[in-house]
Image 1: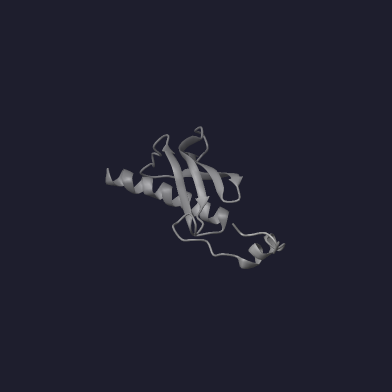
Image 2 (image 1 turned 90 degrees about the horizontal axis):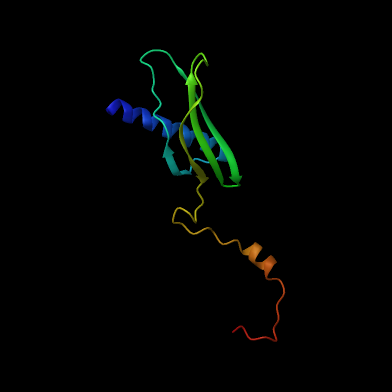
Amino acid sequence: MACWSRRRLVGLAALRDAAGQYFGSDTVEIANLQYREAMVLPDSGERIVQSILTPVDDSTAEFRFASTSANGADDWRTHMVGVARKESPARNGHAAPLELDRVRQRCAAVDPGRPLL
């Protein structure tokens, strides 16, 4: 059981690394993770593994973690699916910095004759 758990964590680490490379950030979140099939690693030999990310928007991508035998004779097997997100300061509990220049651009017109409330 410990060996299986260690291997499962290796798959999650590979997904996090792939998402980090994709978003150009070390702070990524893996969400809606679904295990579809265990990835059985042979005692000797290798498996070809792919982390496939499909963009949803600038900070979100759907992912699929799949593998096949080293010689490519087996069909591709999907092991995990879910969503990867680039974490923003607002999402991880920190307020995003206020960009005063952008606020001033949006609120450039002032109407001194109208009350604020």
